[in-house]
Amino acid sequence: MRSFMQTAGMLPVLVLLAILFQFLSAYGDTGTFNFGVGRFLTSANLPVVAQLASINTVLATGMTFVILTGGIDLSVGSILAVSAMASLLVAGSVNYSVVTVPIGLLVGLGFGLVNGTLISALKLPPFIVTLGSLTAVRGLARLFGNDTTVFNSDLSFAGIANNISTPLGDISWLAVIAIVVVAASWFTLRRTVLGVHIYAVGGNPAAARLSGIKVWFVLLFVYGMSGLLSGLAGLMQAAQLQSANGLQLGTGYELDAIAAVILGGTSFVGGVGSVIGTLIGALIIAVLANGLILAGVSDVWQYIIKGLVIIGAVALDRLRNQGGART
Image (cartoon, rainbow, N blue to C red):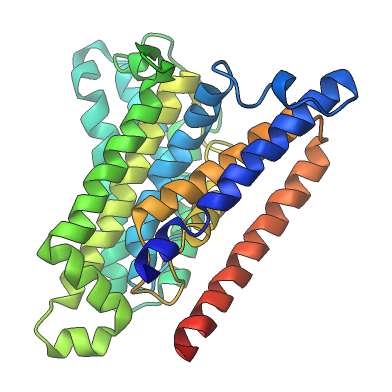
């Protein structure tokens, strides 16, 4: 029961937010509270929310692996940008267009493994390493594109940004990809020996090392996974926009990913959390972004509210840790 409450603890918040924005969107149109005429809980808007949450879900899933070990990855937004830029540049060449997707994934994986190597082999603090990567990789993204926006309207993988028809209505392939990533990650963490080792390293690295777990390999894996999923998110973003800008693309995405992870119940100190909770956290952030727009809230207040949500997520994590210590 405790595990279930920790995983689904923010699900009631998600439901309450959806109901709230249904009322607020109705009020913005009619001036009276009429739940039935709201624009949020509609077949036209809910797929938009799912698509809005998809990229952050993929990034946050990779972040979950890292935070479960007690680490942090601030470079996911920059890796997303450089992966998208690399895929667009390769797609522009007829001779190499077939390797566009592998190139984007490998670029993300490569930068993730660099972070993991510096952290696991040289014992450098994850915050410092990934903060440096955030800046350095962002510079590479700008360098690859000559500090301009790169366009390509003929991407071989552009179809993943399209919708598919289901009995429940149209849904974006991006949302489907996000669900597949969450399912595969859940299986890895909950049904494999490697997943057990990840939780063990996050719970007590010294004890994990003494018990025979290769802590260096676990750290290399989680940062490589974070980089790989950032590369995938870069491909998703490139397919959606059919363009990339090294300066702007992915900026601030790391904050949304961290907020989704913490809102979903994963502890900053490591060893506790679930990707299912992360999915709920990413949906909360997407609901906030979409609902505030429908409610007519100004762009300035959207930033303020999102910042308060991030602070609240950290405060919630602190309260959860204190509660766990008492029990």
